[in-house]
Amino acid sequence: MNSRTGSLFYKTGSVIEGIDGSIKLMWVIFWSVFTFMFMDLRIFVALIIAGLILFRVSRIPWRKAKVLFIFVLIFTAFNSIFLFLVTPTYGSELTGTYTTLFQAGVYQLTYENLFYILTISVKYIALLPITIVFLFSTHPSLFASSLDRIGVPYKIAYTINIALRYIPDVQQEFNNITSAQEARGVAFDKKDAKLFQRLKNYTTVLIPMLLTSFDRIEIVSNAMDLRGFGRYKKRTWYVREPYTKIDMVALAAGIAFLLLGIYLKATSPSYFWYPFN
Image (cartoon, rainbow, N blue to C red; front, side, top):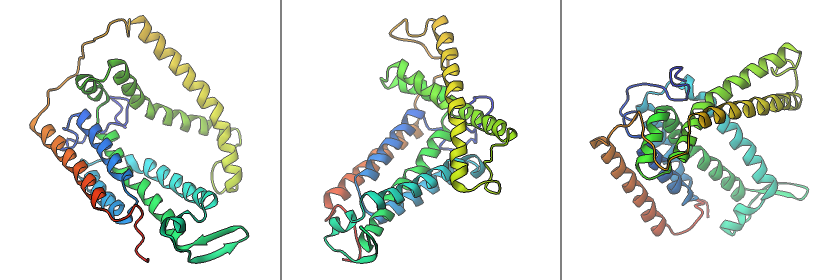
């Protein structure tokens, strides 16, 4: 986090940082559309590799982004378990074959469904690198003004600006509340409590987090009202930069990337790729 901006933005001077925020948002949208058009593990692995290359080019330090990486991986693991419990044979229904790995009561795990769960998990992970690159390489003020320039109402642009700025504040507040609870004897460390107990203890952080967030919302809204925010249909921006050649190249590359996805989808023989049929 850059303390001067109070956001996830981290100044590195990379080529990706110099691309306009609206162009990077379009890239995130194109990337997401491309990903959700397919159920093909090969494509998702290729997207992860391409995303990690962009992450490397952006020069974002690993220590700054590892928390988000870990969070998404944990979410993906829980989602995989949920998929197994809710749709234990959906992968087999897609392929039309049932190859049982093991059966426990009413739950039957097939090789096809295991591959389907793996594909879904990798699909979510494929969205992670480009999202982190966008969040950490985009200055909130520049991003808000660029959204206004492409026609997004400035109220929505400013809302996104505030959201990007307050993500680190919420994270810091979480750390403060957790430290306060630990001082009162609530165990969060794995050496002090079992996993279920630690998860239960984390619920004690939720209510203080909500109350603090409500207080912050009231303070910000009062400050904006005092400054007459929203009175006019248009507004000027203190920070705004014109599009450059690299922005146009990045936009053209994003459109070509999306068109490639549409072509691959149109020529794909099946919705779900399973190599063992």
